[in-house]
Length: 173
Length: 388
Image (cartoon, rainbow over all chains, first blue to last red; front, side, top):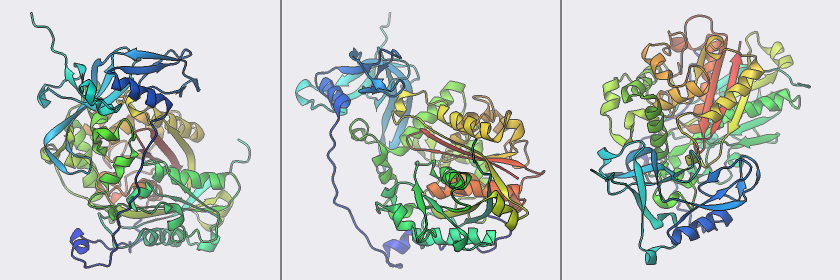
């Protein structure tokens, strides 16, 4: 605010002013719903998840193996020209221990969430997913993890066909 | 460049920033616009064009927000554009205003930014969940804070940065905001307060985060010819830059915002800036989270990668330091009505360069300042360089 301006506008309200009807308000919950086509590239990706496999698309110009797959390379702006399975194992690139649900309500048991660099994909081709079968204090950067799949009959072709990723136990001598 | 005209800012306006304001979005747009026009000594009839910035329609539940807000923003029966680039909107809006005038098409442009997040209840957070990919991300129950937590953690890991190194930003900005008459969350807090605040999504804690807010901001832009007629004290838009990365945000290394660097280089090239830390006297980088100020100082080439926490610890970024950063109090202190928050930063640089910032005025004789905003799925940078 400029020191030349003395009167700045705005009248603050408290949430109780809303809840207790001290100011006129109107409420509405829109009834719009959405159904999305997964599209060509992600459609294939989901079909492969149903089979328990993770598929990437490849660009022969820049050589990238891309997850999630796409039908065009945004870098070379040309069609991708191959499909390639990558492994369902990878490395934790970064992670968080979240006490927040989607609506910002608080959780007692945290959600463990990570970006996982999948083995066989190009550098920085991370996938976001949850972690499981691990204590929050045991998670480490660079930790090797593996997908835990839903049983075959329960898979529907969705990102949640992978339940979560769990640490790969190093063989102890 | 052919025909590009120099563009001046000649007036700025700002409303209070609060969690919930009684005024509607239109009313906030009006108050900010009128204040900016009055400050410039101009009337709405002097404005040949209007540009408005406001963030997701989902906050208001009005899916033509640009049109809805138009008359409050002074656009009634005028050439009018609404722009939206997520959190980057507040600094992108004056960039759009700049090209309206720089192109020679108009001699004046009223630039307005508004955000009213409180209409979405119980918490605007839920509207944010609709920014995520519907197929691959939303089924995981995404929360907006997650992505910042993942980015912050990656940044900390890459450079070995500790939480207390980052918390100092929150302490500084909330402290600076005590001197800002519009501020929502000015406070005297300590690093320990930040470290002891509620863990939301580790490493993000309550006091690492800016609030949700309602508010409005506005600027009056004019061509050089008009500026010379009406003021002895114009502030020039000498650098403009903007850049976007992909929404595939898990497909880049989050430790460094390359797209912010790209936007900064574009603005520096236009402004003829070769050595940003030496040539820029103060900056208002986007700080919706405390680590973002550091992340953006690095992306803006104001210091080396990983060096921003050290400069902060040494006091370089205080108002009386060598490179004052967010003297306004930033989003952490003044508040974060998204588009209006970005434009508030440009207002602050304008007032600082004119020596009108009162208790917030940085010492010396600042000639060159920068404001930057950032947004969408951690993919957008907008940069403006102002000179007196």
